[in-house]
Length: 470
RNA sequence: CGGGGCGUGGCGCAGUCUGGUAGCGCAUCUGCUUUGGGAGCAGAGGGUCGUUGGUUCGAAUCCAGCCGCCCCGACCA
Image 1 (cartoon, chains in turn cyan, green):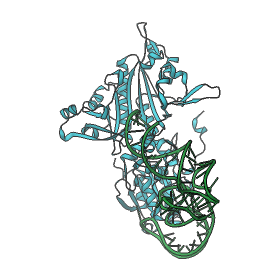
Image 2 (tube, rainbow, N blue to C red):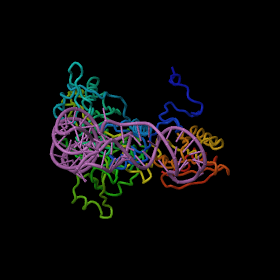
Image 3 (tube, rainbow, N blue to C red):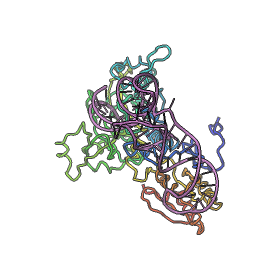
Image 4 (cartoon, chains in turn red, purple):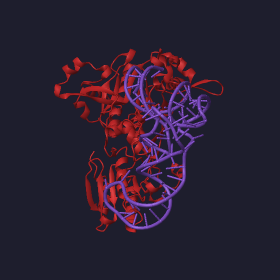
């Protein structure tokens, strides 16, 4: 059976290049659900929160809990997909664990009582103690130990993208610090610390590539390893004025390019070393004396940052407590060495906006933009203008540019303002005035530059991404 | 959880001090005129003033409890 048979028939304008999964169909605004707000909501304090509300991306349903409206949902899907692709590329294998877990599982690791009020505890109809998972180390360890017994069963690198809940004392900043949040979590299982280090390095590199694809400059910073010790814990921080904590680093790290296409089965140590040789630390780990000694004054960067990823080797903490052991070649049985590697997917939506917006609205990096091109019909109902817009819509859809066509009756000013607000990378503006000479305008959201071109030329150049510049 | 603040049409707010039966802007609907950067005029609809109780002839307004939300702090991806 081919999967294609299971797929509903696509509308004819969906194009012949349709791939297996369509995460993001094109859209006509008249059919969409985009409740934009002209006025700024009073509760929102930071730019990303304000803009997400104004752009109709999400709606608060409770403190720190949000409904993802269509536009926000598309961005969330795009980010998830990029994260997924980079995990797959690094050799991690996707699965999906439930949100609700049993308290007994957490008693095994002694974390049920240790976790405190951040854990949302639930009782089911049989009075069984359950919880909404704040993380999944226990569960993945339980899964691993159920099936894996031999040194031949490792290494394993498993991940899932799932919602979590932490009952934060004070949720704030919209999705940046919600109680419910979407996380990608990878867990590694290895025979020994050397194996775990190899897994760690894979994730280290995969994270650099992931954040680069998301249009972010993320800097790995040495993080506290707690009782485990060692050097195997890094936070990945993006720089933004509204960052939650202060960070200090060598400024060369910010512009260092991502490793890109590497052999994940090869030795990645040198690539990691390149990135960890220069000074980089969050407030908690900062040593002013070392910073001044190691970094020339002109290169000292102190800024505010947002943590978007965290990788961590924790040895046998859970495998010990939960008896996740494998038999080694010498016949002995030992707990596996584990690590966990998180990316805050929903937080990234806010993080990207913090890093990329202006006074008019969001400026999406192309890779995560909810739509690739916004087509603005300046006079809906005018036969020629409608026809030109339909043509552009069909062509850009076929080219995989995922256009959003504003075919509403709103006035031009309002349409421009909405397009700027929702931050699509390119706007194709089509109206009767330009059309008289066969022309349309392309506006690049990021730079504000406008190009007046022949309509066909504009469509062709947008279709091939000719206006892109990083 | 400690400190502070706010709950009044969908959104943003005034009215509360000094009690007398609810108002403004935006949005929505209708009509006309407009139409290349958030239009104009005319008209219309929409609110048990978070909730419960108390004081009073009378409560959005005064008092008490509760609920929700926001900000600062401690906490955190």
